Image (cartoon, rainbow, N blue to C red; front, side, top):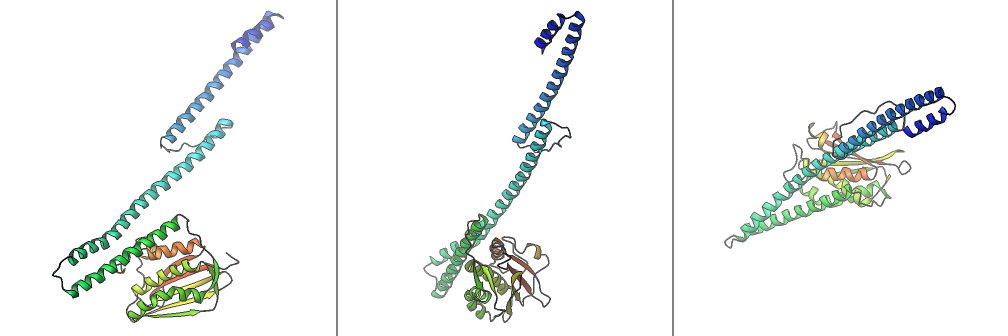
Length: 320
């Protein structure tokens, strides 16, 4: 800018000294304006650079974007949007980290109880003076605890697959009655031992879903109802279809759901006030995850007739 000022002044001096003076003063004023503007831009760039360094260091304190026009204002606005997004992701990661720690704590607690029982019973079985009756009882308890550990491990693996979207659901049209019968099949003997009745009503409709995974979800719901239904009670299952969705309702004759449990009943490892002694708190959470992964839904409430009611909904094929 100084060289341009000198060159312009020298060129103007060829015409007259007055022209040289005007040209020199004008060029100096333009140079001053240019330097002030450039200095202001560099200061703003420095502030943006410092802001990015803070963000990179984990400081997500948000600075409101200015309302000026120009390329730097646009850049600052975009940086602000990125900062907001990074801040939200950071908060989600913190929550997920806390949830992971809580889940690991719950899992270790669930494994600790049967493992402790297995250790104690193994020590007792090593006693050569143990009578045959007690030995048979301890063997039965060992098999029961091993079965519980096996089920818990398989359930946790299935939940992890659902969380990772690693499950490939093979949807097909199946009759609601066939789906219900498939879910009830492994529970008929336990229900008979407790003198419980499983009654089914179906309108003959169909549902589009993965029959194996969906039957497992329904089976978990039925197991929960059986746990909370007294001996001699009844569990009613009904299915209906309309233009929008297929609905399966499961109603037990137990005491119903505690109001304090309703908001948390589908949370993992949550055990309600009336939960069974050996309940883990995974079955209902897995059932909800399976249904939602297929576009369906699961709700729970207390029926006006008494007892707990679970409502499964599947979108109709055309709606799906």
